[in-house]
Length: 335
Ligand code: KG4
Ligand code: ZN
Image 1 (cartoon, rainbow, N blue to C red):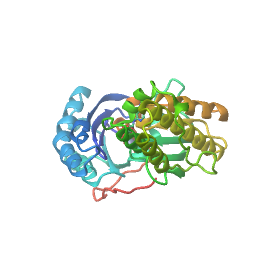
Image 2 (cartoon, protein in one colour; image 1 turned 90 degrees about the horizontal axis):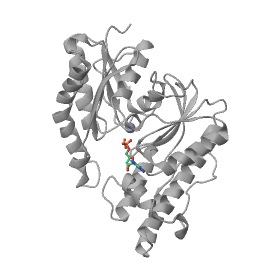
Image 3 (cartoon, rainbow, N blue to C red; image 1 turned 180 degrees about the vertical axis):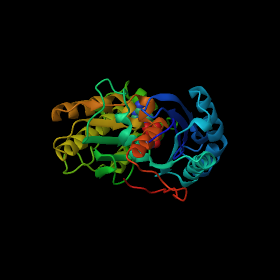
Image 4 (cartoon, helix red, strand yellow; image 1 turned 90 degrees about the vertical axis):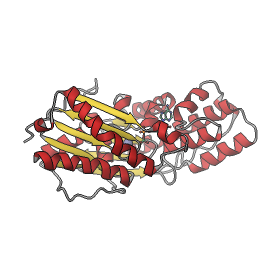
């Protein structure tokens, strides 16, 4: 049994995050520091810079978040830290800090799988107006680092139905945006540019659309964007067409995934690309066709955060699952 609040820590990519949740899942305080500015000049996340930035930022952030929650280290009931998958330097920083707190206070430590944390976010009590979805539901994780369809059948019971054969969808947005001279990360910029363009003015492929299964592929689309840009197509039109293509592909893949999961209670979307309105609309259409609701956590909990890590920790602790201090962070850690 959990005797106090849970400190959650996230440091697997370029967000440093800490959160404190009460044992019932109530969010007491949360904070996220983005390293976007540190990486922007390089046009992508630089692992070594990320690790050092986590090291510089995490202890102070954790203390500020705990102060806001009115919780001292001595009040905690457990510590949960993302321990994979992700960039190893950041994972070592976050899990090492978490283990340090756990050792100092004799607390249980939970090594959280980042993907599991995304998968369970929708179950946070009181989060969604529609209520928490019952198992089993489909998770469509669409971020800069991940692109997969996961059947969430229960705690610790995940089945990956499909994944990307090349780039993650957020990565595809960022690469397409770069080809149009937009700053990194380009997804939001591309969406704004697309609003001023005509999707029908440029024909782009819809990779894997209509094919069996629910895998993804975006590298051919990126190549087609490069060609259109080189041939002098209006950037706004290319952006609009690219976005329409991605939205159509994601909706098609989600339809297939839902068909592979009879009895699914919902389509849950997570990841930064879930911020895209065209993507959201297409996915809502796919969910409606399958007769299930599309559920999207608020954006700050769709992107990388520590609330989801603390919550995954609580779910695991409730199931009696903890990890030893010898748990090694895992850069690759499939669900
Ligand atoms: O989940 P996230 O914040 O970080 C991880 O990758 O873990 O996702 C970031 C990705 C970036 O590739 C970014 O360009 C993309 O999500 N993104 C968007 C939008 N907002 C963020 N892509 C398309 N449209 C958006 N509005
Ligand atoms: Zn993530």
